Length: 257
Image 1 (cartoon, one colour):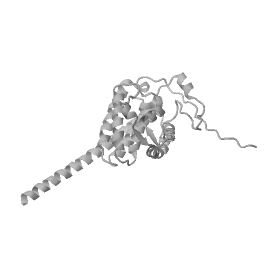
Image 2 (cartoon, one colour):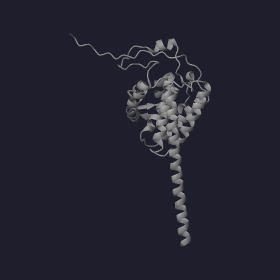
Image 3 (cartoon, helix red, strand yellow):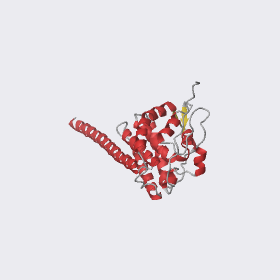
Image 4 (tube, one colour):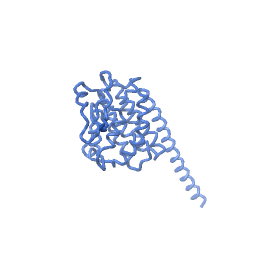
């Protein structure tokens, strides 16, 4: 008997409630026409095209598998498509979950601040300046972060489900945007590794919770974010105390002379 080719299949679409308020703003709502259009046949390159029910881990895996040495911000947004707001939050948090060289944390923090401000303003789709869309990141760096994150994301996705959906209305999403903006501003000035990693984890959890409509994940991410902010405040206080101590020591030495 001739060996049959193995066929990769896309999971059957999940039934989701109608989107209202903040869900529509995040781009998580889909019409029946969009769902039929998303259920496209397998692409010529062998990869399964993303559909409206693809999980976060699947989207990130496809993104990291793009056939290019560097990915521009425009490439990333085009892959994320109509779920760009929520998945951009996840994507901007992931690199900071690992020790990353400058200026990656700074760039992620600035981009996250821009995205968060637009969520807080109630925009329906993300806007990025043309100069920013042309900026790129090495696919190897992105793939390294995604490969570390995907196993954990898949475990979280098996456990996650729509619940505590307090952020799905317009007011809740605007408040979520302000909270993400606060995390982004702290991330911009975060201490390397010690302050950066907790904030990256917090942003990733919040973004995943928004994608999955899971308020428990969102609250968990905000809790980790509070811890990250406190760690950074402690780092700033330690540096400030050390500088003051050195100045006092120098003044004392000058007085003794």
